Length: 133
Image: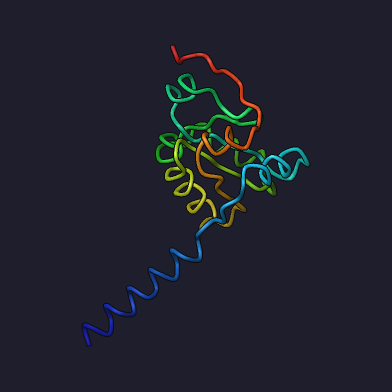
């Protein structure tokens, strides 16, 4: 009986995890959606990382630490962009995949493009960001 309950719990958890998975997009496809106005690109790295490498030119800068915490910046951003797809990236794609999956689990259309290097390798524009004070 305990084994059956454990298997049932594991199956339910796995179903939720896979149901909340966000799709992976190419940077070029993300750029098209952002240019069309149907999506918003978000860099979810931390402020010191933005200053070190620059960011994708159209990116909104929203740290994952804020997403995981009080969502001081994330809550108003999500309210303002309700109905738009939220496309994320970070340094290598791990953090952005986590945030995209969490958003998808809340019913927000989201996707992940991987890391900033994927954006730059695709020849897409970047911009400089000042170091935090």
